[in-house]
Amino acid sequence: MADASYPTELLYHPEHDWARIDDGTAVFGITWFAQDALGEVVFFDPPEVGSTVTAGESYAEVESVKAVSDVVAPLSGEIIEVNLGLGDTPENINNDPYGDGWMVKVKLSDSSETDGLLDAGAYEATLS
Image (cartoon, rainbow, N blue to C red; front, side):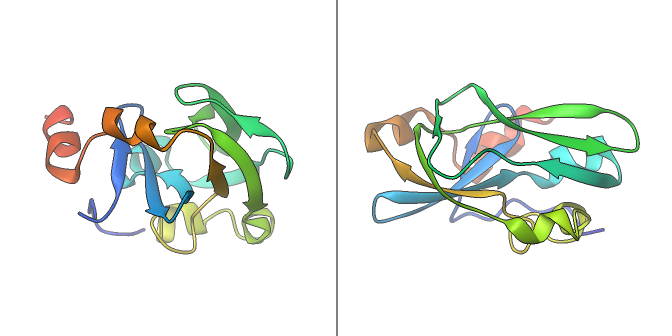
């Protein structure tokens, strides 16, 4: 399992999801805190490419040995890619939540929504 970390180049949703923004698209995943709380992830149920996601609403499910949990979209847009590798190796969500454990790539529909997300310091402050 990865060590606790919250990369400063990411933006964070209070529901323990992160977004890496790059020129109108974003990569989404769950934070170290979320994967740690879930425990060993055994299954990722992704959305369909082409479907739309809405900030603050569930777009996928992650199943761990403890529970099934919704994954919340930090921003709105259209799914343009899904990390299909998680089908074979869902444990990457635990081992590398900010790298190989990414979940989806999204073409953003409203880039101003990023104003509602937290930077790493503000997110970490919500955890204490």
